Image 1 (cartoon, rainbow, N blue to C red):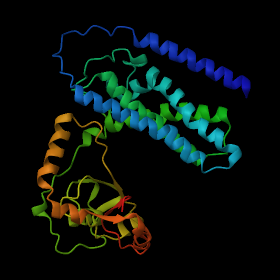
Image 2 (cartoon, rainbow, N blue to C red; image 1 turned 120 degrees about the vertical axis):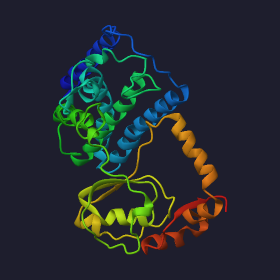
Image 3 (cartoon, one colour; image 1 turned 90 degrees about the vertical axis):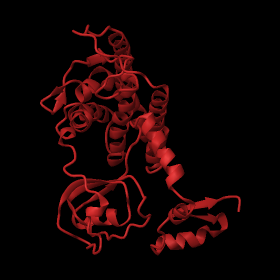
Image 4 (cartoon, helix red, strand yellow; image 1 turned 180 degrees about the vertical axis):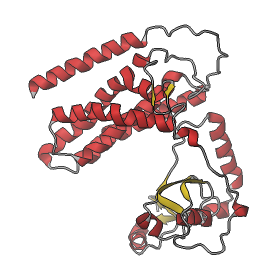
Length: 332
């Protein structure tokens, strides 16, 4: 094991050195000069901050979480898995992973090797992914998710896999599974990305007078920005294994639905990652929140309780009586 660890450490160091050399190679000259996009300092700062926060989710976040769930003798090994993934996936992503996931498309399935070793990935924006931030900043942001995804899998085989097998699995899974799927969803030309939205429905066209626990299977995926009855209706009309992205509570903080869509049809209710949103979009959202969200509506969405009242709140959670966010005031 000591020899194996020494060999792996040597490979990582050599890989990082080779990565640095390859990343510094000049990109191939373009046939015609394209208009240069303007870099927004605010967008770039937010993207780098988001990248750091996702990295902290892996280590120490996920490392400590999984380390606390295993026996004491295996805690250190479980912690090390998250940290070693940070090292090995960083090298894999820079050498060939980013190219397979985001380089120019091949049949909507996978990217090419045009950007192997980050060749051509520089400090200028790339319009398909990063119109207001450096291309390298976008690459770094996406690398954080390439790191945390295999780290999440380690909880499934904690205490049951050799270190050498774990390393081999991590590199193969990232290359064969994660990189192609990332291209499908986020890559320019990916077949899932090109599907787009089938229909955009205004609230006025929906019949919300009678919402059934399960209605006709209609949607494989949906995005809701209202919440309340609209979100309840969407849940009841999802197809098997459908995905709902909920991004707002403007209509109501209540979700009057049952568990039937989630158990019988396997529907999933997800949130939205806003890390890639441009700075002007985020400013508009915060401005609308400041002007449109009146105090009475905010009171309906949350309630404040004193620290001494927490036991009663726990009872409400157990009895399914909590319908709003609960804010705990530690000073009371």
